Amino acid sequence: MTNTLFYVSLSVIWMMLLYHMFLMQGGYFHYLRYRRSIPEWEKNEKPLPKVSILIPAHNEEMVIERTIKAMLRLDYPKDKLEIVVINDNSRDRTGEIADDYANKYGYVKVVHTKPPHAGKGKSGALNQGLAHSTGEVIIVYDADNTPERKAVHYLVLALQNDPTAGAVVGKFRVVNAAKNLLTRFINIETICFQWMAQAGRYFWFRVTTIPGTNIAIRRSLLEELGGWDEKALAEDTELTIRVYNAGYFIRFFPAAITWEQEPESWKVWWKQRTRWARGNQYVVLKFMWRLFSLRKKSIMFDLIYFFFTYFLFFLGVIVSDVLFVTNLFVDLQLQVGIVAMILWVLAYFLYVTEVMIALSIERTELNVKNFLIVLLMYFTYSQLWIVLVVYALYLEIKRVLFRQELKWYKTERFSADKKSVPPSERQV
Image (tube, rainbow, N blue to C red):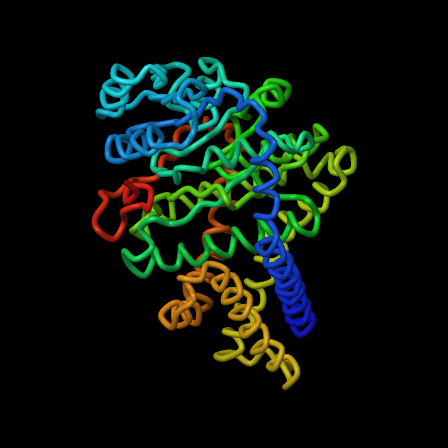
C-alpha cells in the first residue's frame, strides 16, 4: 500500500510538470507573435471609447499618490478618461490625498464608501466604483500599481479590435524585485505565471485568467454579469469563469504592462497568498458541482486544472514528501528503486528548465543570480506553498461551516526606494 501511494503521488507530480512544460511551449509561441496585430490595429483609427479606471483603495496612503500620478501620465485622451478612486472606509490619508487630485483634475473622481456597505473587500469596493463610473470600458488597477504610459491604450486597442473578447488582460511585473530574496522569489514566480499559465493557456486553449489588476472589460458585460461576486476572496478568478460562461473569451495581451509592489516580508506574503489560495479554492468549490452545465467547455478543463492543482497535486506532493522523509528514519519497506529515484531527479531538472525558459522571455531576468535562486526555490519557496495551501483550505472550510463574513484582506505596503522605482516614473 505504501509503495502504491508513493508511485501514485510521483505520477501526479510528473503529470503536472509535463503539462506545465506544454504550457511553457505555448507561452513562448505567444511571445513570438502577440505584437504582430498592433500595427494593423493602430491603422484602423477607430474612435476610442470612454474609459473608467477603477482603483479600490483601503488604507493606501503609502502608495496611492504614486499610483494616481501614473494614471495622469497615461497616453490616452484625457477627455475620454475617468479615474475613479474608491476610498473604501480608509482610516488614513488615502481619501484626503485622492481628493487633492480630484480638485486639480476634472477627470479624477473619488468615491468615499462608509459602513455598513464598506470595508468588506475588494469586490464590494469595485461594485461601488462601477456604480459611480460612466465609461464604456472598465479598467481595474490595484492601489500600488504604476502602469506604463501605453498600458491602457493597448488594453483598449485589443478589446476594440476583437469583438469576441469580453475582457483583455495585460502583464504585470514586480517593481521591488531586487529588494531581498523573497521579492526575487516572487518576481520569478510572477514571470512564470505570465508566460506559462496565462500565455500558455491562451495559446493552446484560448483560456486565460483575469488577474486582480491591469484588466479591461466591457461595461455591458459587467452589467450583464451583475458585477463582482462580493463573497469571493479571489474576485478575479471567479469573474473569469462567468465571463467565459457568458460566451466571451479573455485575451492575454502582454504589451500592456503595469508594475506592482510585492510583499517584502514573509508575514505579509503568507497573508496575501493565503487569501489567493482560499479564493481559488472557493471558485473550484463554487463551480465544480455544475461543471458539466457550463456553456464554455474549455473552462471546464480549466476548472479541472484548478482542482488538480489545489487539491490533487498538492496532496500528491505532500504524500510523496512525507513518505520519503519518514522512510529515512523508519523502515516503511518503501521500494523506491533506481527508476523512481531517477524520475525524482529528472522532475527537479524539468522544473528548473521550465522556469529558466520563462525567464529567457524577459531577457534582463536571464542571469546567473536568478539561476541560482531557481535552484534554491524548489526546496524552499515552492515547498512552503504546500503548507500554505493546506492552511488556506482549513480556513475556507471553517468560513463556510461557521458562515464567517468577508473583510478586506489588504496587502501591507512598503515605502519605495531606489530599488523599487517603476519605469513609468523614469519617463520624461
